[in-house]
Image 1 (cartoon, rainbow, N blue to C red):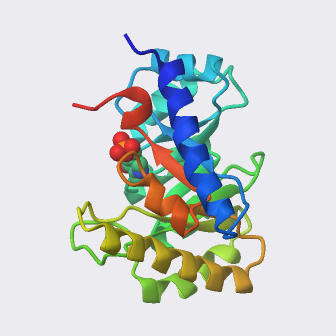
Image 2 (image 1 turned 90 degrees about the vertical axis):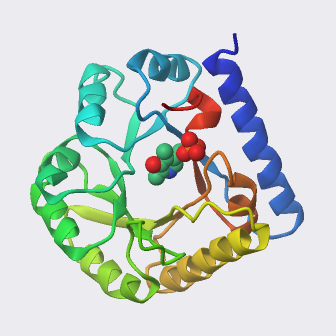
Length: 231
Ligand SMILES: *Cc1c(COP(=O)(O)O)cnc(C)c1O
């Protein structure tokens, strides 16, 4: 049986290879962080990845995620990222248990997270989720809404704007896929001119991390390739 350690190792190698390719293109030398997406997977598998040295984990379902965070709270150096759709009645749990939220796509949610983030915790790191393919079924704000939302988040004392996240449409059209990632990168660079502290462009998953890294991703979110397929 393939162990989590082996799967992690090949994920690191795959990302490293794509990042090196990018460097040889004189594109960008920022390292690429791997977020291990553990949604629907038991805490034992997260512990195995942890023992292997991995520290960044992503979850999509609030209640399941909070149970895991609480179960593993002795491992204080785990960095938990919330990456799923956010309903307003669940925002408090996210504000209290996570250090990052990658799926903020509207002002109402940002306002609640800011109000609900406990004062004894560091500000919550926030990525704005962008629906780059303008797909009806996807969450995320539209390109033209980014500036206003960024300004709002920037002015929230308990939130720190770190960058952008996207999930692109699943397509076999490699050119289209790359174009979406490049559009995101252009958008990120433009926003970074205004907010120089931005450092995170989260895009690319098990199926499309090479084009995402080629276009300039600083973080990829890998579920299946590390933890196996989900039901
Ligand atoms: C589930 C999920 C992933 C991981 O997808 P894989 O294809 O399993 O790598 C990445 N990002 C988000 C937002 C997800 O919900």
